[in-house]
Image 1 (cartoon, helix red, strand yellow):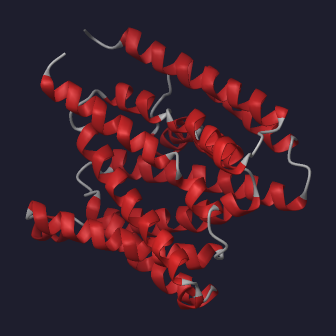
Image 2: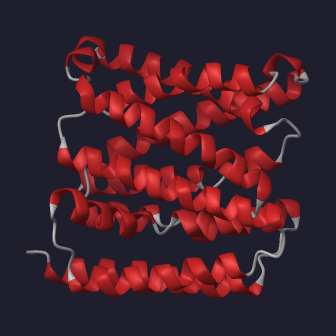
Length: 283
């Protein structure tokens, strides 16, 4: 294994571990969802803007932004507006496992939009994913839980759409749209909540949420440059089992049996599809 590959593995693994802590930040504060959205955006803007300046890529980000950059910003903001409330309304396990189905929704959107014919393994995996998601939702006993599950599902479909925008327009930059997305979300947080009314320690936690996740986004982007796409996708799925583990140890949150069974189906779909892709990839 060469140094570039080793570096890529470390960066993508770190990114997956960090992303798996999202539910801890959201459930760890009493702040409302949109107050979290506001301060998370402030933290993310700070890191992303400084990173762009450090790389000397501000001019490049502006020049390559384009309509696709705006599309990513708007669609991504919609996903974040569903992502954070989902954690408030349902379990960490439900949100993280439903989100793990994103690659299959990406394949479906790519088929509808770009007529990319999915492989047989992806079709089989997609069927398993749908059964898994329905199994998870069936275990939500309250209206609040169901709303959280459907917000997680909406967020998953929306973020799959972001992936497809990048596939359709590969020259779309990553950091500029992330910065713009956070800028879009700040007035939303001010409109629907009172972020400045939070106690200082909660503001600091929400800022840390944004800072940490901006760093995770950067490490994922840098690591993905050094690894095959299939390997990056597979490593990123570490988030799915880790998130419920953190929630169990920190909040004593027990995932219900339907969530466990649904998660196993989705995990089987992901592993099966990735193994098939790896076996067919040229050596």
